[in-house]
Image (tube, rainbow, N blue to C red; front, top):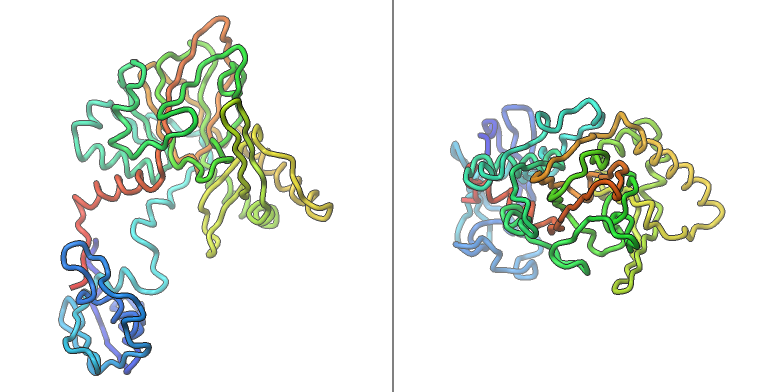
Length: 384
């Protein structure tokens, strides 16, 4: 955590504390918020709260506030002891400040056709990734930041992906098991197991929850065809929002049903193609034309949705926005399945074998692994 600007001025009343910083920023903290977050109400070892909100007074009154170079000290009317708050912690948790590591999610990439996967994204040999903590920290950070990262020299042995993914997160088991295979089948239940080209898509939007991250390990690649395609769904969605905000809003507010049926599975879930937070920030992109169920929209909605849907699909088909890679045997790619869309070009199964194995990883476990690695090098400041 970087050092905060100097504290320039303190103002306080019985209900609020206001801090003016040397960089011109102003932060205001309510008395109840401060009392709720003071260290005396948290376990000394694990940091979890020891009280509930009903244990606190509805309107605690501040008696006095003092400060030194690194903290402020707050004394309440009816509390036996004052509480100290680290200035850096207060600034990081002030109203309106972004959450920790929020800048990691801001590095989108739009024109993938102009990018070189080996140079513009994290790409390391498995031996480096597994043995060097700093390499793994950088790789995991870039995976979250860019939405995609690569490894090479992963042994071309069935299920060896399971030896790699524990460094990234926790496997999410599905009806396919812990590992799924992508290889040609004469009568495929899923078009991924054909030799057809697959347009850009996200996997399994019919599940709840949707798989968070995905890994694909290339055991056998076809020498001709079968190139992999990737695109940053967040960048494309923001491109649409900037150019045609009405179409963006239509996709963000319209529920779409996705479904998948096989002999041993029957999934259905409803969600928007573009998912935003209550603040309008992008949270996820869900796009899979193969598994969209018939739309159940009324006549006043259907034309507007199809216009927005068609425009978004056209952007996904635009080769400017596609990163095209010819993966090699032993390569592995990991990507955010709720942000990065992937696809492939056609190949001939009658001429060339092609075999991939993959895993889905829970989203929170990947973010946790990254945070733990970063925390080892950048310890978080705690409330004093």
